[in-house]
Length: 593
Image 1: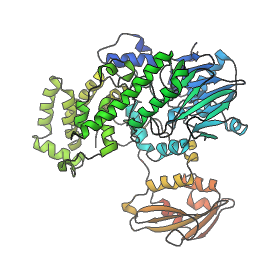
Image 2: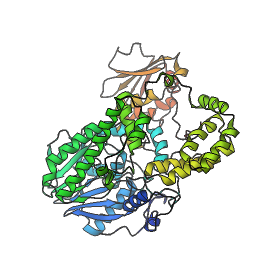
Image 3: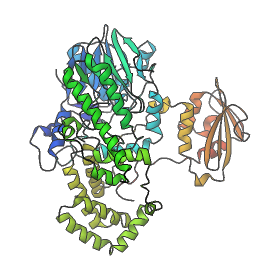
Image 4: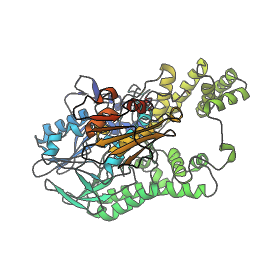
């Protein structure tokens, strides 16, 4: 229907967080630095603007990694999945209103717990809107999984996400062209407003602003908390991220819990059974819709067969004694699935998905006792390089392999040189060249980005983490239990072995909570007399005061000066406790030790 007049979406400081023209180069012919299949996928993902799905249902596509869907109701619109960041969501809503009128947002729905489907919520609604009765619907367990994933392992995931989405790569034929699922991630403000209404069961029906919806819960598929939505009055089916135009990840390269392909396939079968016969269009939170009952039934069935085949054949082969690496090399997809564009590994891949299934069932150990107690990477690398005749000799022979086109072997063997001698200039140069060639040939968008980001950091140094999902909204959404758990993750264990500190928080309006650091472990218990030790200091305060202290907004020395805060006992135990917490490193090395 149209796209934004301003090609640059900026934050409040004027910094560009999304450029709608960045992928214009994809209109040209595919160069020899890009897999032609990925070039095609990237071109399709780069189409941007407001699109009509069916009467009364519209999508904003190409404004972020994900899609934002807008369903017109009696008074306003229901917003489904408001993108990753506040700025892109606001720009998408403005585009819709330019073409469809200034309709108010009368409801928000999060289909699942991944940040690119809720992080832009403050770009479409405010806290005042929610207080005024605008509902936010989400699947049961949404908030728990949304905040725990982005806080507990958030630093490591964000750093690896920079590789996965090619955050620092230039957009172009030699750089970032797609992530397969979409272009890349925007770099604006990640926000979160907690849901006001849970969807708890399949078959649950809800009506928002006259929009009737029937839900299918699909926990454990693409996300721990996820749902599909049928709109019976529109003959339309929203598949969230359970069926998109690619093979999805069973374990993302940024890291996550391993997903269950068996359950995933079963829920796709259930979706076909429940909704395919009464749907004329299926759309999702990424990519483009499928129209026609026969076509969407085939699409959903092939997506189902894709995950079921990977699951069943991986189990068959692991029960024959094959290891994860061997299964990944052995796995061949059925010709009928290989011929379908939407089953290709633009985002997930057959290789790393089969390894994920192996991990889900058998873990990291392949059963070979020689692999049970291997040296860590640096120590192993030094020994390998010494055995192979030294760094210079390994690089010399690897250059011969590079000339033969065996880039995969070059990357594998030169990695040992880099971990034994990270300053070896020849090894860095050769490894960067090999990773670059592997990236150019990859059909998978995230593999390409990983390879090219590795080459970039070997040449130019670390780019760090360009966006963090541990935003103020995310931290505020942590329950106190989750907040205390997130502190326990940060305890420097060896430095805390001899510490024995107990602090009781008398939180106004709640049961007291005692934190106890002992044996390098920080535990929290609710109630009195249950910490295993008498508290050395007690603090009476509000939950807001406690959160400010633990977030670093209030210094321990200033706590007693806060209105209504009382500190009794040894006040020095507060800074002592916090001194045992370490800070995560958002700039840790990946391609070097």
